[in-house]
Image (cartoon, rainbow, N blue to C red; front, top):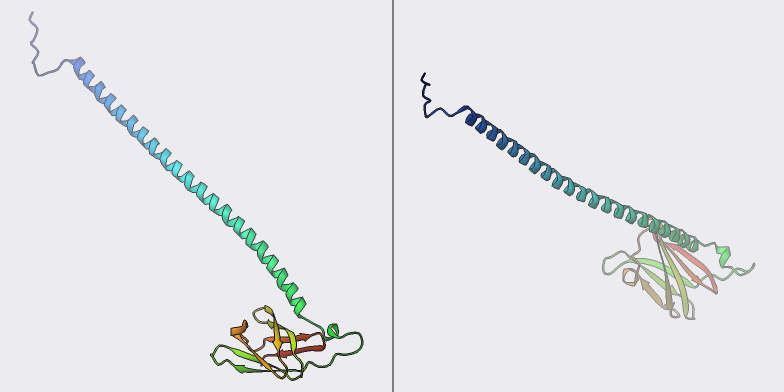
Length: 190
């Protein structure tokens, strides 16, 4: 009996299954490598997202600390403003010694527009024969601004006071002059 001759082009059965096995192994290795690479990329992305979250948390905590400090400073400033308002609000009776009233302050105040064109200037004139050192409180009720100045006014002399001296007058500003020997003089800018 003769065996039919095998053609040289037909591979044996075991060799075909070997190639199929190798192909499946290569595909499995490629899939595992791809999954590993994908897992690595996910890990890098998660790490980056974690760093961004940590930065945002740190920035938010810093902003909250700044906001808390700002609120504290605002409350302190409001308290200072209230104290200054209380100091500037005066009662004529507080500036009179006992029951005898002090004489009127020998000062006149009038206002003119600034020669330089910035606001109003107060012209404070001493009508007495003596040198006067007065304390001038200025208040802008609209902007809640308060300032105190000391003026030296010679006998029968006058002082111009405006933005060059530290205060730009506006209509409604309040000017109060104090001297120990006289009653306070209060003038409102027209």
